[in-house]
Length: 367
Ligand SMILES: [Fe+2]
Image (cartoon, rainbow, N blue to C red; front, top):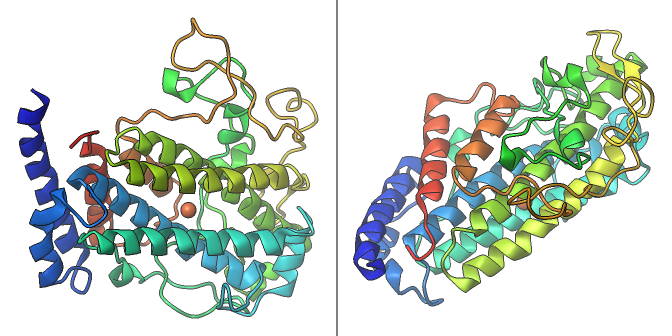
């Protein structure tokens, strides 16, 4: 039964890989690579199935997109060096970020480098197995910040009109709820989830007044964690549907680094000073005071509270949440899109990203 179903599933997935590779555009897939795709069942490393290829290709795309916006953060608020080149920094933005932690610039630098290595590794692994690596260069069309310190190049992502979901804050503090059970969670910073706010200075005019620039740095602080909690869920969600142990090893080795990022950023977001942005009314409340405070909001709770998992008949357990595997890739695309990260992107961009997600979500263990 299983063996009968495999050729069919492989055939569908292989076509999906080919279609997606072509959709990504010229320069990303050569005739040679195309010719190699029928041999996917027996690649050099011993068994990269079309499903594994589709999951890795989606993750490569996600990592490319992460890298693109982390680079924008690093150019203005990180450390510009040979490991993470580009930009020359914004002293005032860097100082506003440092209000959250004096090591923010270093952490931004290191997170940026990590994401760069994630997509570079996954693309190299794909290529070594005869699968088209992912290249989104044709979609680097969005404008850069005009603030002094930013490079003036085309971007894949937009950090200047973000709508940041901060419900991860209460999700990881809940002892009774789990998004995989359909539960929803209140926002830590309700204002951030309802409007459009810059997470980097859009131009030098954003460097004052001081509370406005601090609101931008606070927005970045919450966006960092919002993104990295997504990665923390995405890898275990997709790992449940990979086939080859080596591909599983890749997902299990990269995924927890996203969680290392997440916990760091959760800690730093808790240091964002309460304030109201005088230019747009955005409020960062005191999360330790009424009506906030308590287990759902208290800022020094940076480790997951135990909660329900799999079935309510089991005792609460400290876990990553969500980890539902069905539709996980498309959920990630929807989450990122809703955050405004792709505002201004072309329909072709969304078509390619959606196809990569669809193919990843079609992957099944053993196929
Ligand atoms: Fe990553």
